[in-house]
Image (cartoon, rainbow, N blue to C red):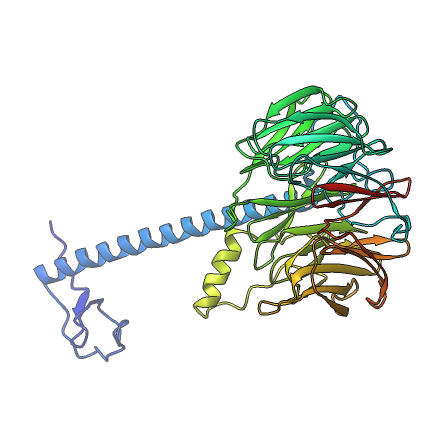
Length: 481
């Protein structure tokens, strides 16, 4: 039997069904005391409608409660993951090499790579020898492709025709030479009795530095255009889209990691890897990247506005130079936990005007004023010296600038008719090649101390333990003892 109890009325204002016995409509607050209750079939329909509404609201509340529980659970998972990653988790170390061969962190006993030691500081403990006559010179069979590299006995240079030659430091005589199938775009790495040669076709060669015989070789990728680094028997090498760690003793691949690389307009991806006891830093696209040397994990990145092509690392400080910015960061810097995709989302919200500006990654200082077409920096304990082929976009003169390491301010600048090499810090001054001239400058003021004319354009001088300096001029190597 159908229950015909009268218990519903219809609001005349909003026309919604409301339970009888109330004074005002719960939806529009209209006074409904004078409204006649429903009866018969209308009352039955009204009750059924109310039951459906109650059921719908119940389902909605259940769904909302479930969503809250899921969100709380996900938030708990995120917090636990962040706590674990930040305070508990430690990355595992890279595999141990069969060799303990290590690169020197300074150029005291040789000139390990294109800019000296693994920190690429370009400094020497010895006097410049600029007043000394040329002890010997030897002619190259082709133009030099890379800068000179030296160990305690030999000089090594890669030529434009893919030829690698070793010369004696005693008299400049040829010791051995080796022809490679492809070009050698980066200077080799000379460490003790071994020479590591990266080739443009992606093969890394390990040679016996005494005779040039191949000890081992490994296909590392499609393209190698940066000098490898070495520490504790591990070879650290950056390739086209991947960076690798190899065993220096046998060439075994210990570790590799793909990189989301950005191709520079020059076609190059990686630039200027540097290393100290704890970290490796490299230029990638528009970023400076810092990695933990023992684990291979990335610890920090900084957007340098444009491609960072010259980097140095010294005293817990990484110095990077790009065409628009020279800056310094603490090697222990860490990106916040929300870095990456969350930064992109935050930036989008800021553009929409619903979030504050995104904080910039940490840096010690920055200066938007490097010379144009610059060379590798020379780094002392107090200053950074950067030379460029032009002082500005519209300048015709070369420029050498000294930056204060405390705040990046410019201490002095000196215009030169021409610059053909990176500066080199010596015990008696700042040495730089300016066309055919080798010039010695006062590092405190930039004033000229001495000058030597070679009658032909010369490139970056290098220094070894004996205090001998070697310079490439034209197709000749000159030795100053």
